[in-house]
Length: 338
Image (cartoon, rainbow, N blue to C red; front, side, top):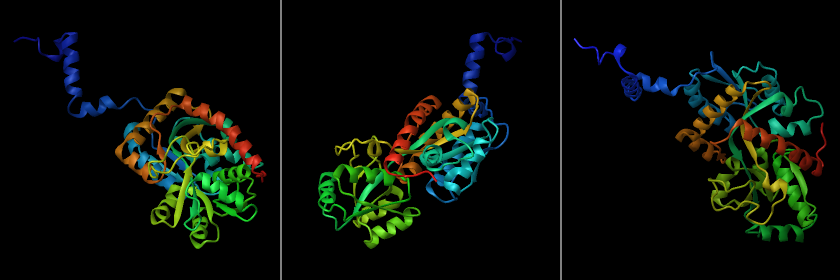
């Protein structure tokens, strides 16, 4: 009896060959893809909105795929209210062990600190930025009876109607307000701001003709753009949105002011003090989930731009740079902290 092919007597080359063959098929193939994880029990992702909204749905889709990576289930914990402060505080005051994270928006992670006088935590200093999962541009729309077909015609139209027009946004301090306020200032149009409690009532008034100009998410506006009731003129951010490929960015249309160039995002953050290796695992899991067929499809359908190559370092840099910009924009728009 020879022992040359028995695993206990293989040489190093034979052992590596056997291991490679086993890893390529059967259960070992799965095990070989799963890194050592920090997740010793279910992972909780807190969402600052009610169940059923775009952020919640995207979180659940990504959570299913991240669970495979972590080797633990991912539980979505909806904590709406307080402009996102309730959810943010719950995460900021959790243990920095990687088992609790926030999937929130630019508002809940950045601009809230400039909107509220007193917050129970500071997003910029009490949280660890992990990764952005998508960019969240908004679109400028006008009603079908507005004669402007592009941004140049729009600016000429609002200038010619100085002091007679109003625009709608989904709330005081919203990106829509900041962008339209900038356009009004550039054109010298003196437009009035109509702040709605969310996008649904704003869209209802656009369709009813109470306002002729508005800015909001593509998720809320796309069906009405497709029907011809609203016309999209431009979108914020650095590149066109997959859901509206024929609509230019403001920069392409010649407008490069901060309020029109900057873009919101959906992103994941954890409590301050999260170990770097755990932050890296979160980023890798999120990037992989976004890159999946289901992740990409859901994000694009919601009117967002998928981001599947972010890192904690890149996100931290963007977070630090963009915070003061949102602060300046809010101040310029006359938004007073409450």
